[in-house]
Image (cartoon, rainbow, N blue to C red; front, side):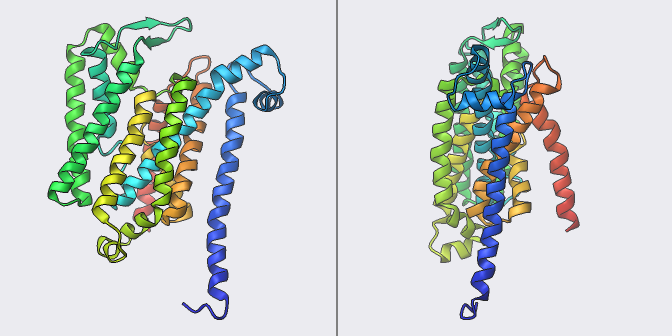
Length: 356
């Protein structure tokens, strides 16, 4: 590179500037969708009143209750969950150097579903009550959440352990994840076969990913985990760039590839398990969002990871808002909508990639 004429630094500044501009625009879009999400619903609240309530100015008591007790925690849960799932998908794709890496394809989500089924049936967390609004609630959600979390982490630990025994090649990790996914799906089906009506309803209800489940306390717990793990990933973005360039190159640059890969997989799994444990299974966000962001912003993890983080929050928040409005007054679980949207988008991305 020739820097003496000043041309390359200028090009580099433009290159960085475009990526930063994209992230700023994405953040602006997220803020606008957040306001709309709080405004729209069975009871419409004018945007002015939403803004007044959020900054602490006085509004009608009814508006305060809707904003602070119902819509804001749900919207923030969607943002935190979407950011966490998309970020863990982006990191998994990067460290495995495999575009199919995601919490869903590596069997971690299936392990969580099996854990929840065990929590419902074996540990007795699935006695159900009908709430006043006519939906079904699990009376001991914490037991179910912990069981789902433990099995998710267990699945990730098995993937990492087998990869370390064979040498941590991306192919071994992905194939182990696929095998585990099949195993845990079979286990869930077996439990469902022996479950009674109430237990079966509880298992099926839990697997529907729904952002309305989280209260302020659970949202705080989720936010802390997502923030801490996200900061670790952002700090290590240079290492992931090095691994993207190839293992030999990364080792030549002083990156401890096996360690970075193992820690990255475990932390991405912790992130996924936390979100799934609190909200249920929300598919495709971790798979599709990193691909969409990569097409716009490129593969440089210094920008791809923040882009996936904000993009995931935006996608899940927008999907959650649409799911609430689509069959109003009935509320569609957001996982149904993300699955419907995710599959065609992913196929389109594959076809676009193939043509290139």
